[in-house]
Structures are given as C-alpha cells and as structure tokens.
Length: 188
Figure 1 (cartoon, rainbow, N blue to C red):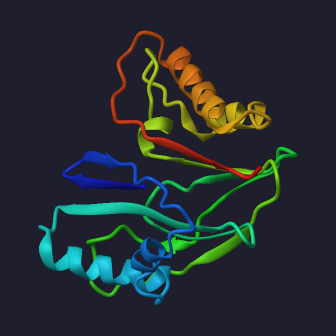
Figure 2 (figure 1 turned 90 degrees about the vertical axis):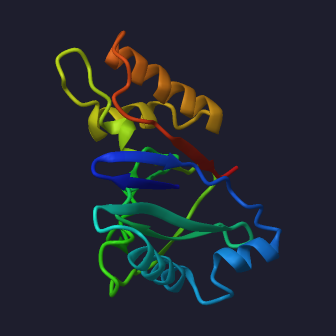
Figure 3 (figure 1 turned 90 degrees about the horizontal axis):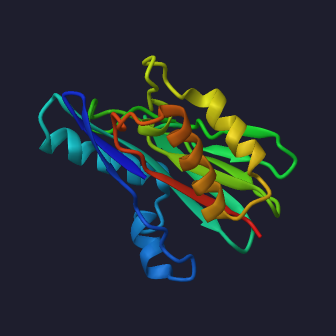
C-alpha cells in the first residue's frame, strides 16, 4: 500500500497482493532476492533522483509466507498497519524508515511477525483515521482499534464493512476529506 504526496495532496494506491505461489512476481518485488530493505533503498534513490523536492511517497511493503505463516515487512513513512490477534491483543507494525524520496541515504529496517489462525493485519491510509465529524474531530486510532477489536471474529470483507459503517456513522453526512484505502490480511 502506498500514498504519493505533493504539497499536501495525496494519491492512494492499493497494491493488490501477488499470489505467494507465483515466485516470479515475489522475486521481482523482493528485488531479485536482495530483500525488502534493499528494494526500498533502491526505490528511494530512484525517487530522490526523479521527483521534485516537494514530493514524497509513503509505502508499506510486506511479504506473507504461507508455509511459515510469517509476515516480513517494512514501512516507509506510511501509517502503521495494525496486527490484531484473535484474543484482542494488538500491535502496530512500525519497523522501517522514512518516506521515500526525501533523502538519498535513507535506510530501512525490516521485521518479521508470526501470525496465528484468526489473527489479521489491517492496512490503511491516513484518510481513515483523519476522517472528520461535524465538530471537526478526527476519527483517530482509538475508535479504529475499538471497531477492529469488536469485529475480529469476522471475515476480511466484514471487517472492512464494519470499519466503513463506523466511519460513516462518525462523519454522519459529511463528505470524506481524504481518500480512504483499506485492506485486510486474515489467517484462517
């Protein structure tokens, strides 16, 4: 998932999951076996060299390994996805580095988490938590965590529907002030 910003205006990109069985695509995304951190460093250098200084991109890059049920990831200045455990515990996936395109020497760390059946990861852009109500209050992470916790027994589409319903209720008849992109990865 990525968001490209230019002077405060963002364009959200929901990158569909590449099937894990398709090794050709996984190898391309994994920078020919060099790892997520190297891929992000190369992407960052290319952006620094090709975009104006007032532009940058935020990105979350993750690879799910079905055989080990592990998720390796790095963030590049993007909203931290939320790993919600089946028992209601949660953690924000924060490891990574700065937004892409800001500094040519940026480095990125990766981390790995093991998922259990019933666990899910909720990916989203800032338009979700920055949704405003009539009083110009933001929806925020507290309300998001509440709806995710309450819907953790549901399937991925129903989780997304629950978040959208809660966002609509929160903003009432007000139009969204930003794009909202969401995705759920849930382990069976």
